[in-house]
Amino acid sequence: MITLFYDKTDLTNKKAASWFTSRGIEVHLKNIRYISKQELLHILKLSDQGFMDIVKKGTISGESDDTIYNMTFDEYINYIIGNPELLKSPIIIDDSKLLIGFNSDNIRQFLPSFYRKLG
Image 1: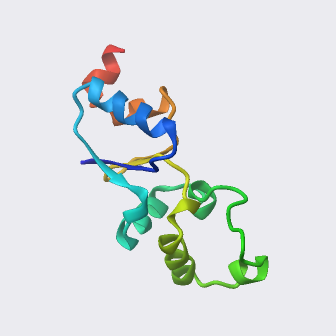
Image 2: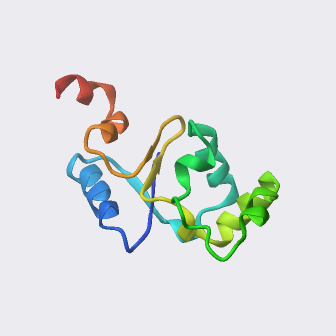
């Protein structure tokens, strides 16, 4: 099952959801504010550069660099869950694929293989 984590304030989320709908692909929409620890860990497992891939640049305001850099992995996970606005969106995942943001070429990885061969 494909899951699309979205932020209501970002228009690219609507584009991504519409892309799936227009192709008849079932997608589970989930507000990024309700991301679970297990889901966040799965996203990190699929990412190439871990937190750097999923956290918006320059969004860790109000915390000193020392505080952030001295957090353990679990502390940082919990910090992100408590502050989901730090995450880029949309985040689109399935069991083995990840896409951060909307790109009409890269989103094609979620098409079944017979669709990709046609287009």
